[in-house]
Length: 92
Image (cartoon, rainbow, N blue to C red; front, side, top):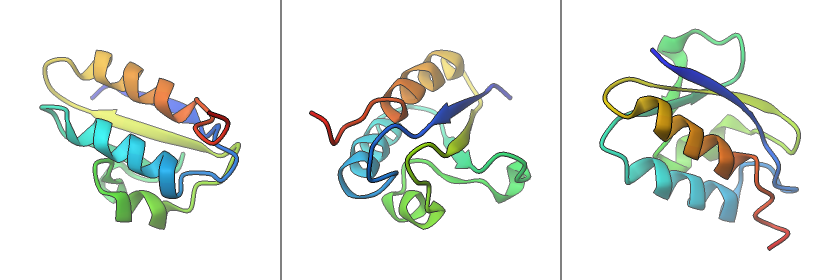
């Protein structure tokens, strides 16, 4: 299963606007993507398309998260999602 790590760039962490942008992008994919903290088992990962899951993760600015996906296009999808997380959406 492909996975990527990403560092949360938004100053407010993965809350409100950044979480909504990320959840929408993950939800638009034809594959399921999960998000977790490093070291957490893959079985405990949360649905990356769920804004409630994202906000309950409590990822702050500078925190690292792990994204996982499986299926056709998983690598490209993860690369795109990492770019979203590593962009400070609050600076725009």
